[in-house]
Length: 297
Length: 308
Image (cartoon, rainbow over all chains, first blue to last red; front, side, top):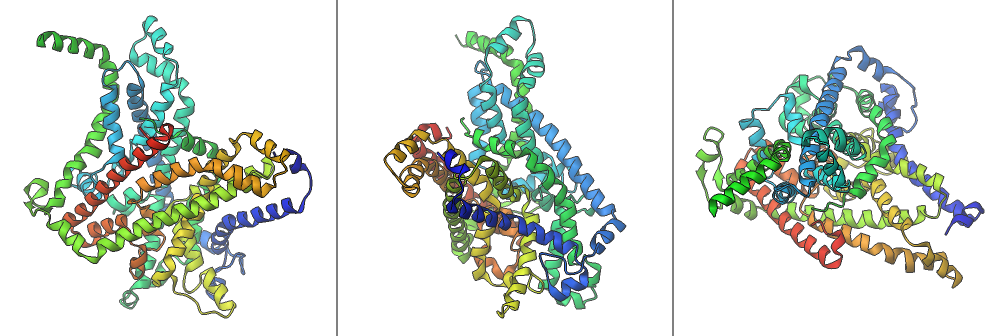
């Protein structure tokens, strides 16, 4: 309806653009603030506070971080490892489970679907889960504690199932006539055809692992296993603790040893920045995942 | 009779065997990570001790529940959880419907740019968001206090004043989720048959009239679905928002503590596993009933949108 109007100039349209430009600023300026702090010298920060433009440009924070890059590099390594292993295993499990229950001729289709679906509706809650992982599976302070508990989401199984059900059933029948076994049909025919769904769900899973701080928060205390998100959380947490308990400072803890303001924000830039440049390219997958997610059981 | 039945079952199973083995890893996984914890709910009725384990610990009946519901915490965290969810829903819906309608007035190319920008916060974790909020609200150096003092106002101790947090959390949540929600409603807006607008134009209807009489009414079904889904989740809070963004500051618990953060704190700092499980049970149970109820309502309105 606005095609003819779009090409014409009007004050209303100009106001609309002004509005959206202002709105966009609300989304961009917070990022600018963090960037600006990380590039400002310490003196300027304590003198003028946080500003949207560095009063005194300085690379000090980044120099500090790259002088001893081990911590950040190790955390990057942990996050990448967890994301890759988790996404691979998670996608495999999701595809296998979804494939079985997407087959209309499978005898346990109904039971298995209900079995999976029920876990979306009801859960044992945090404490039994926590005791299971730490006391019975003994995963505390292992890399598996950050991978296994998030491996298989019933939501993704349902999305995958919905996709697989749209594939023509003739595929299975003709494969069977050709003498292909279930595994061969699955691996050489069904999986290649499911590439769009696998990409979307794989992206969801990897995004979840990359940004996860919840499992580390629960199960990881060993600093050698800190992921990027946990490293960020720990730094913020320590500083909050000290500012809430000033007596700790007098007890001999030197605040100078903790990362200064600009260094903290530089850490955010280094750890969240690269992904913030990458993820938007996959934006359409994130959207399609949501709209496809009409989760029919 | 019985033997032929088992035989045919065995025969059928043989045919379905491969599919069963394909789903087995997933089934075993859910057994361990979803169904075993459900059994663990018995902890809610026990005085749990690590050395005695789940089954060795002493039964205490409903003591854990009584202890929780008799404390003033039960009301506080339930109220906070429900009110925030309602607030989030109203704010997100009003703003994203409005933005979706306004976006539709622009040309395609620019829509994409605006949408991408609004989508950016979606890719951040709550930990990163907590740093961004901190850059604004830090008492000594934060941007907001700098601005306040330069305008002649007194600085505010944001992380110590509980009354500020309903606004801060609503705004933060809006900032992070609005991009996605606007996209969903925008898809709803462009799906509307253009014939309606053409007919309205012939009748000489103004833009405002078309918006209030055509666009908004046709978006209502979508809003209703989201409303009912939100009601199903009204007992669940986004832990990261409520734990990370206020930096777990004890001064502001009265307005930031929700069921999920309370369960976590009782588990990790107070270490009362029995009561923590009981609160989790309460949340799961009410949540379960609400999801069933909301799905039943959706089904009544429009069965295509029901979850099952």
